[in-house]
Length: 190
Image (cartoon, rainbow, N blue to C red):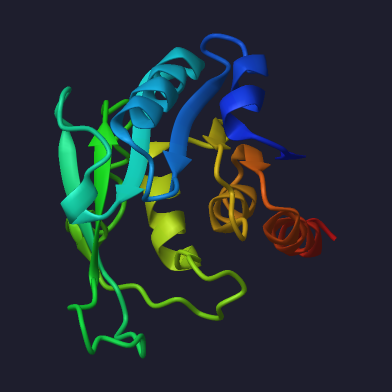
C-alpha cells in the first residue's frame, strides 16, 4: 500500500506505464474539459488493463468521447443540504471504461447498475460508501491487483482494496483529507 500526499497531476507521472491494474477514482467535479482530458490520458497510460472507473455528476460527465463502456448510478442518501434555490443532486454517475475482469462468481444482485449504498459514517464531505467501493473492487479486479485512486479523499477505495486482498496506491492533495485516509488505512493494517 502506498498513500502519497501531493498533487495527482504531478505524482501520477511517476507511475510507470501499465503500473497498475485498475483506476477507481472520485475526482473533483469542477474539473474543466482540459483537466479531464489530461488526467484521463494518464489513467489510460498507467492502467495496464485499460480499466478506469470514474465517479461524476450526471450534468458534468467525466468523458463524453470516448464513451464509457458501462454507466452506473449511485442513488445517494437524502441530504439535509439547503435546497431553497436549487434541486439537490441525489444521483451520481459512475462511468466504466474498459471491462478487464468481470468476476461473475458473485450473486446476481451484485451486478445491478443502480446502487443505493449508504455512507456509514462521514469522515470526509464527499466520502463514498465502503460497501459500494467494495462491490466495484470485487466485481472488476482480482486478488493481488494494484488499484490506483489519485484523489483518495477519506480512503474508502484503499480500504476496500486492503480488505479484499488488493494492493493500493492513493494520492491525496489536501493534508486534512490525507490524514483521515492515512488513519483509516493504518487502523485496518494494525
